Image (cartoon, rainbow, N blue to C red; front, top):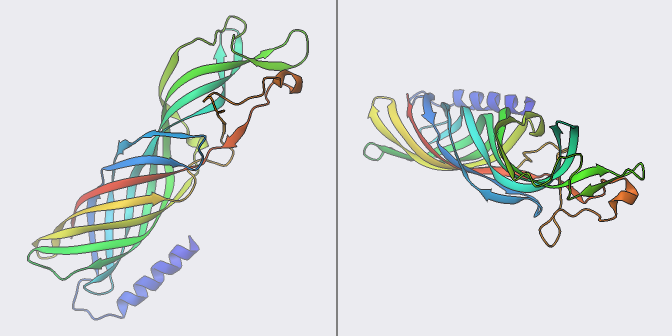
Length: 280
């Protein structure tokens, strides 16, 4: 945040040094529907498609000159995607808590407060149109994270009555059978699993359509490429084997029952954003 403050002060000081024959500050409102997806950084997570998300917020151009501006503002950015992976999960039942290995198909619905920090280059007005391009960084702060899950059960951790150890079993125990089909759940709060900060690269282009005076409509398309891990470092999954099943040791009972191959969940989120708004 200190670096951002220094950058903003430098921009404002630079603006004051230019002549006064153009408007120094433009302010407006926008909506940003987007197509968002997750790009896993491990082959142990499979991307399952895109989500249609949205955003809205304020846009501000701090003008260096008629052609150059510092583009910023604030947006409520919808992001996310759909992935599948194996994981260990605890579930409550009539006979107490049970531990399972599950196959999870999850839609991540993430929401960030995003502040763009970009350089915006503009053409002279051609007719009623001014064309522009921009590139820079986006700094996002997680404000909400939910998930829609489809969960199927693969193995259960079962106590061995002969020893103090446990082992994974495909049979289930205590009347809790593995063959439960699929469980669908919506709107799960996963805020504790998601990193609080998202940084991204922003590249965009668009056009301003002059209405009258300093008022114009804005239209644009932007690629928002995240480059920080969506997940907190503690989040783990279970690696699949060559057959596409969870890769845990068949002799796990000899080592306490939890001897599977795990990995840290790592993924970024990307999106193509369409912008429409009004600038004053």
